[in-house]
Length: 113
Length: 111
Image (cartoon, rainbow over all chains, first blue to last red; front, side, top):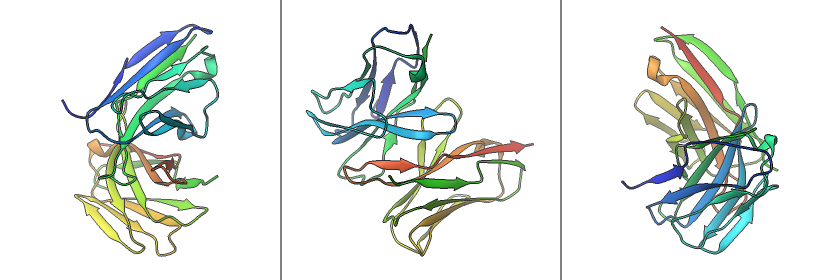
């Protein structure tokens, strides 16, 4: 099905482990984004990408790494997970035909123990 | 950086009531977006506004782009149980199609 999908939907990991959250979109949107959602903070931008091989930091990038070798995929890696990274993570995309209207995946709920 | 302030932060209403919420910015926007997030799901775009004074409807939802370009309003008429969720406003945040989001208004409906 067309759209934007995230995997896994739920993940529990231990402090210090590396974990990668996946995001895949089928619209060929140029722009992709990673947000985290925490109570009291709304949605905060972690990293974004304007095209394949072009990425940049958002508001809260520390502790995260991204890559974008293909237009359709935008994985987010926590190199050494900390408890403060327990959150719900959302991937989103937008493109030339959408303007700033972004479309979101269903989210990944990550718990770091 | 840019900040969006949404109010109220939460609302508890009876089914059938009308709902009003708003969003204010510290800077001028040329676009306002309203999203709804159902429990356990990602935000879904409800309405997009592109011009000061614009009034746009989507079913029972109506949103307005404030004439100062620093605020926007969302109204829901005759609320029903499926309106429950968190409503977010959003606006452009410095290029590359980035968005900044308000903290959300959580709507709870008592049947």
